[in-house]
Image 1 (cartoon, rainbow, N blue to C red):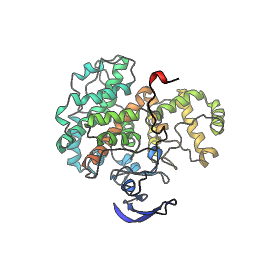
Image 2: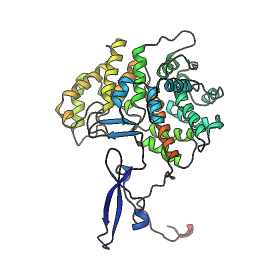
Image 3: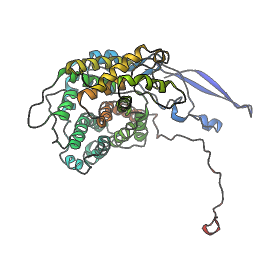
Image 4: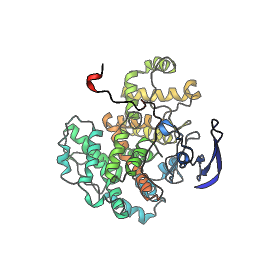
Length: 433
C-alpha cells in the first residue's frame, strides 16, 4: 500500500475543505483513506451494501470484473484450475506461495490426518430432524466444533490458529457428507486417508459400508475443480461476515459458522440451486423462447439465473473451466436422456448466440455449470450450497487469518444514516389513545 496523493473534500455550506490521502495497491483502483473523516469533518460516508468501500487491505484474491480476471496470490484461476489441484491452491491461499513437492506432501498429509470427527458429534447429528436442510445441519455442527476442540481456540496463538485452520478445511467434507447421509437414512462413512480431498468427499457421499466405492477419475477431477473455483472470491458477503465476526475476537469455528449462515442466502451461495429451479420452471425446450421474452420484458420481474454476474461484467473466468468439466462429466456418464440437462445445454447454446445475451454480456456463469454437474452426479439440490461451503472454507480461513495477523485490524463497526424519530417524551400507558 502506497500513498499516491490526496483528494479534497469541500463543504459548500461552510466553505471548509479537508484533504484525504489516496492509497494505491499493487493492482486495481486506488482508494480514498477516510479513516479520519468523522474525526476531521463530523461526517460519515453513506454506502449501502459497501459496494464502493474498501473494508480491508488484503493480499489474497484480486478481481477485475470488467476484464473478467480472478487472481489468487497473483495466479490466474484458469491456469490454477488447469494445472493445479485443490490442496495446492489451499496451501497457496493460506501461505502466499505455491508449495514445493515436500511442502505439498506434508500439507496434504496434515489435512488428511484431521478429516475424522469426534465420535460424539454423530450423536449431535441425531438431534436434528431427518428432513432438516443440510446447510442448517452444517451451520450447527461447525459452530459446535468449538465445544469439542478446546485446544485450538486461542486466536492469539499462531500454532492454535494453524491447527484450527487445518481442522476446518479437513472436516468440512466429512461434516457435509454426514449431513447428506443423515438426510437419506444411510450410515455415516468414515474418511479414507488413501483418497484425494475430492475423492474422499465423493466416497463419503455415495459410498456404503456393504461394498467398495469405485471412483470415476473424471468425476473426481470435476469435483476437485469445483472446490478450486469456489475457494475464494475476495470480500463477498460471506467472507465479509467471517471477517466481521472475527474482528470481535470470536473463535474460528464460530466465525466459519457465521460464514456458512451468510452463504446460505439465495443471492449468494444458493445461485446454482436457483438455476435448476429456473430450468424446472421453464419445463421444456419449446418454452425457452416464451421464458426469455418474459426476461427481456422490463415490466416483468422474471429473473434469469446462472447468466451474468454481479462482479463480472464480462465472462466469468471460472465458467470457462467449469464448462469444460461439465461437458466432460456429461460425456463420461453417458447422460443423454435427462430432460433438465438437455434443456440446460439448449439454454447454453441459446445464450452464446442470442443478441440480447451477447449485448448485455449475459454469459453462463460458474453457477450455471456447477448446477448441471451436480444434477448429473445425482447430488440433491439441498446439498449444492453445502459443497460451496466446503470449497469456500479455505478462503474464509485465509481471510480470517490475514485479518487476525493485521496489526491495523480493529473490531468492525459500520455507521448509519438515521432517519427515525428524534428524541420525544415518554407517554404513560393510560394517556395513550
